Image (spheres, rainbow, N blue to C red):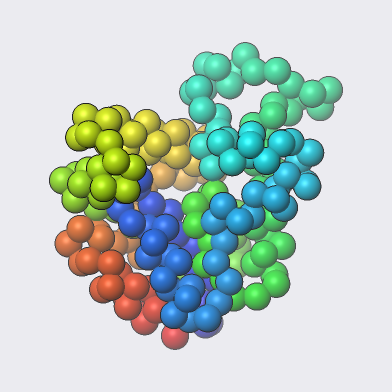
Length: 195
């Protein structure tokens, strides 16, 4: 079956977001990343600021803190509500039209569809560190900490809300090392895989 939806999970600093955006432009299809926040806000009733900070990364304090989190009368935490709203939005987007969806456990949420190409972008530490230094204007120590913190939160969220391990090759159709292949080659490989 032709792949009409591309999900991109990525390590922080690997350029996965940039690669996904370029693939969407070149294919002339919709691109969803932070622009889905307003739809998640509508479905969850939470503030845009909260969603922006937490949608992809919650539960941010780990499993112990999650166990102690406040819950509504159904037993759901705020993180659960965000995840459910996000899941609904991603399912709706996948029904609308061909698209690229960045992060947000989209690969798992869309696992039952045959028309999805799930991509994981990773990279080598030196290249990722240099990219973060350039993009965020931080020193090397801060860049390494940003990488570790962001990837840990992504992993915690993914491992908690899915039955899979974040970054494990068998969870994805395609795993690409952007440091070794370069962004252009990653884009070309992804586009070749959807034909």
